[in-house]
Image (cartoon, rainbow, N blue to C red; front, side, top):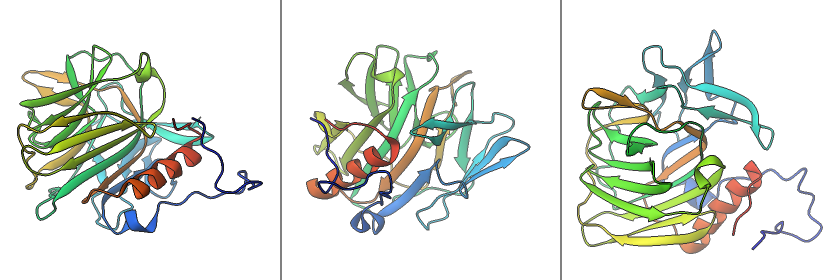
Length: 254
């Protein structure tokens, strides 16, 4: 199903999509690669991606593994490419203690072939483990969400989705025996019952490569926008967030 402009005859060329105010009040992290003030380069290398949530959870490049800024890549806007072992992480602990849910919205594409069975797009955890919440790409053209890395919930997605830009929405009420929900471009793919809860204490938030045993793995992911909320939005607000992302990045909802 094609999403129409909000008003008949509305001039979409001048429409400036905005994140709903209801979502802003629950922000934990907000990364937007089209915001030129938040993407900081040093000698053409991406060294900082600033958090727009107001929580100052800025991400910094590790060592010399710099992500690439791809200018005008999606709907005329810049995106960030995390291929070639690129990674960024917070300098301070990223904690979700005291919240009762996690909701994630991201605009994602895979740029490189992965070299592991499971590779995280982002995660909360240490250098060698994902002790928190980690959406993953699999080498079987499948999307997964890992909780504490020992609880992997797999979702079958459409053929070829990894090589194209899509909007992913993930809703996770905290606690065991609750239902995770995954949406692709506004349409629900699946729900799965949690068999283990995520670690919401102090962790490092990280995008990109991580150490699996003695081998570094990279998701090869491209990210345009990443929004993390500390509550589950209503169906109406979820749809508004997805419409905001679709308008902004020139994507089509189902």
